[in-house]
Amino acid sequence: MSDRVLIVEDEPALARALAVTLRAHRYETTVAHTGAAALDAVATWHPDLVVLDLGLPDLDGMDVLRTVRGWSSVPVVVLSARQTSDDKVEALDAGADDYVTKPFGMDELLARLRAAARRGRTDEAPPVVVTAAFTVDLAERRVRRADGQDVRLTPTEWHMLEVLARHVGKVVGRRELLQELRGPHLDRETHYLRVYLAQLRRKLEPDPTHPRHLITEPGRGYRLEP
Image 1 (tube, rainbow, N blue to C red):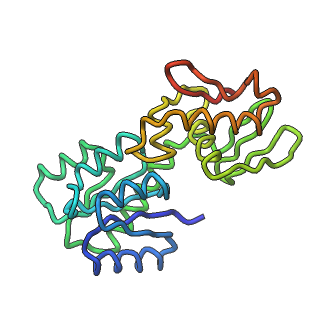
Image 2: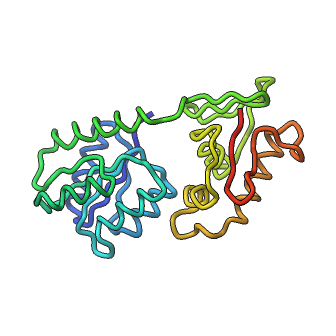
């Protein structure tokens, strides 16, 4: 499966050139021309990498970076005409994985993207989470019951289970989970989480009324227990 790269760039010609080049190197790409569109794409498209320009028409790229880092660990490579040491330090301190200045060489950018992708993968949870009732295969995006039967989940159900599986055994806060599912601007609509979790329990728990694996931590969030 190819890496998905979100290109955040307000110059149409450069955005097109980046997209064409990355697709030629077998990346799947999409483009956001504004900061708001970038935040929405991170929340809904779930890229593996982000190439972020800092000079955006609606939001400063630094604000976009800080917002993304509040609820996502996706690798971010800043691509900017800002060349001072202070700009680079500020971006790296805010959570950027790398900083490339314009003008730039495409070969260098591709190498830095590959490096950022490798670093991002080293922090991933194990690709398979096994419980007594079901198995979650993150790499194949598949869920199987203990009897080997596949379980069909909606995209939102899968995404919720995926987030919990990547933090298996740990509590995922309600706000963090909702931001992952619905975006950074919808972090107070926590009633949706109860609906999604109930749906998952009906499909995965042997006794949904007494869950053993999809656990609610009152006042805190939710946990996937093997």
